[in-house]
Length: 217
Image (cartoon, rainbow, N blue to C red):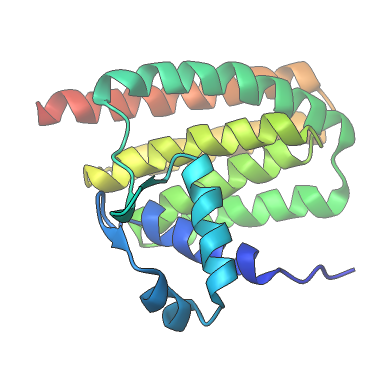
């Protein structure tokens, strides 16, 4: 059964993607009146969307000054964010492997296919995040899913703010190959193998990003 999105959800999704794709850069001011006409939603939806994004750490509101896109995490924090993700997503993927349906499995395969075929570096990482969050959502652990979303958002925020792209096709292929390993483990109904595969995937992603950070110093 199709679930229709609320005006607030539409506004949150629109603004979140704009921020994570770097189209709303760090410290850009969000002007509610402009957003109302741009997204075609009302004042209440914009206000609630901004409140939700502030709670997730993507925007910051200042009294009498307005709301701005948040600064990304420090380079020094990136390693620790990935360490948190490894523990958290390992748990969620283990649970997801026990609960996944055929339709959900096909959705994950489709997201990985989109990563393979896209020519946009920014969309590559957006699809990558959607793959991880879709997988985590299948666990039905809603509180932990919200934490996972915040952590993956911060990594994308860092990438966008610092214009870090996967220019090496070998690295991009490596990401997709890790996803195939995760899917194989899920298909074989082996939750521990899936947990270890997601951790290996995140460790590799962390290494590549830290290498980019080091190169940029």
